[in-house]
Image 1 (cartoon, one colour):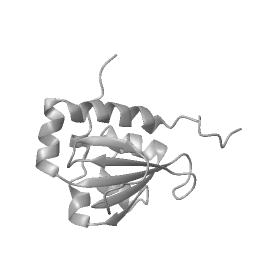
Image 2 (cartoon, rainbow, N blue to C red; image 1 turned 30 degrees about the vertical axis):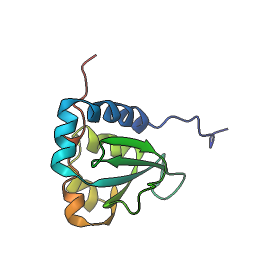
Image 3 (tube, one colour; image 1 turned 90 degrees about the vertical axis):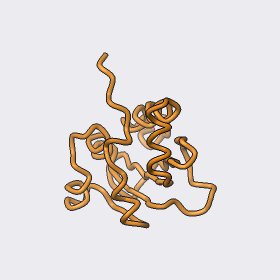
Image 4 (cartoon, rainbow, N blue to C red; image 1 turned 45 degrees about the horizontal axis):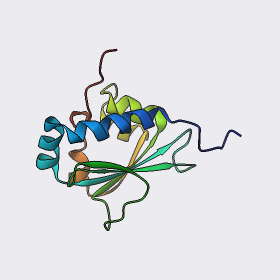
Length: 126
């Protein structure tokens, strides 16, 4: 049962927070400033295998699980779950992640460069 889709990725919780963040005033500012669509493929263990696809639409300000319906995303990123969490929380620099092969990019590099930890909500202290 290990390949069952009920296996939660750590990234799922982050994407849920992102969804709420984009609905806030701070999120609306990000949407206005960036105005791009990102596809994020998150693999449990190895990039390219059993990936979960998320669309972070910074034109409409929404996060959707599943492939992009509106054409082609501006940039597509592929991560392992753990690495995505590190980048999103600002624990790993996106450029370093890319150079180490922890992040793969397809599409517009100028769009990709606007994908920074600033677009993610700050982790709330529980």
